Length: 454
Image 1 (spheres, rainbow, N blue to C red):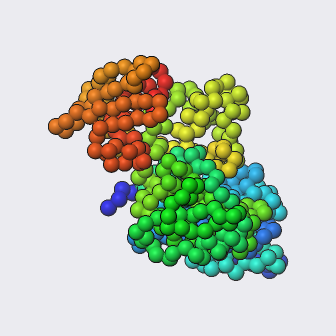
Image 2: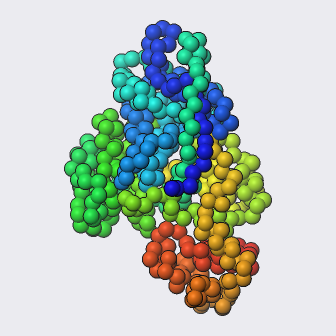
Image 3: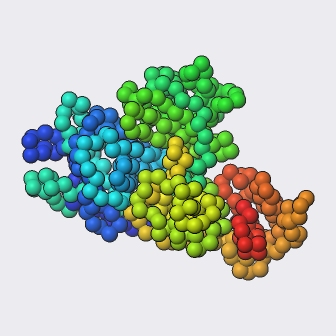
């Protein structure tokens, strides 16, 4: 069985659509945080109830789905509140799909009462109610223990004991390494995007990837890769977006050319729904290891501490502005944010190119202990199984020798990337993060010269 952490969710009341004092519908989301408190973040009226309801329903769909093997549903989305927007994030059960809903202040008529991150209860009744929301209704929105709900006697404690998989926590850590690498591949009007999604094969286990191709300001599928095409492994993973395109403005497609991961952003007049899918159907973000380099070669502890102390639930964290404010180099701030992102303390918004502050409602103090490759790399150094064979020069990279089981591996640290002779690197070519040998060499290079080398 996969490793897991026991975690107890306590909700003040079940999420749902309830009657308010005037008899109208009120969308009320019950929340839970790591301290089992019942935060009260926001209450107000929805300007576009139907659009918001559909976005939250699709997010719930993603969180409840395991895209290649059926498994029990055990997780609820994570919500972050600040003065500018509400963000809801979640992973599919297989951790191969990351979804995020951004609800800016213009969607609401109301005020933010607090800033923080918490879990949100999406039960079956709540999901059904979301689909019944209509724009001609006056729908109030509340996050936390809303006083209307309390005054109507709806407050009660609902506990559900679950095992929280480590892969879900690691998924949040790993996805922050992919998002900064994304670039816009195309953007098409919503009607064209809807036709494209409806034309995709429904098979959940395709033998070959399907490619999304930009064609005359539209988009079409192809089984042949051409320049600029975006690969899709498991087309059913993006077909979940179909219901959102009926009221959307456009679909923006992002891609990381190096890995093959892609982002699918449904854009509305106000608000957006972002979906990131892993490079292959059977690859969950939790097992990728892309965050390992940031964890192995962090900036100085002082820089990380300064950046950590400056986090105040900002919706955007501009590295340059933060560097000026803290008296640090921009590269150190970027490195510190990457480390904090790997610890669940920051997310990344590809559109703005900035991080945002949020703290996952779980204890992430031992994140590095959940990375066996990093632990094994440090063990190689501690036991003296790695040595510098030849230092770097103007025309040659640094080369390290690492003692393995019955063999010796060689690591080359070059400007354009590291390479190793081990079977792991030969198989994945760095696509799933560095091997333990490269990590060990990188740590040694950083210790010897005072700066990260990989």
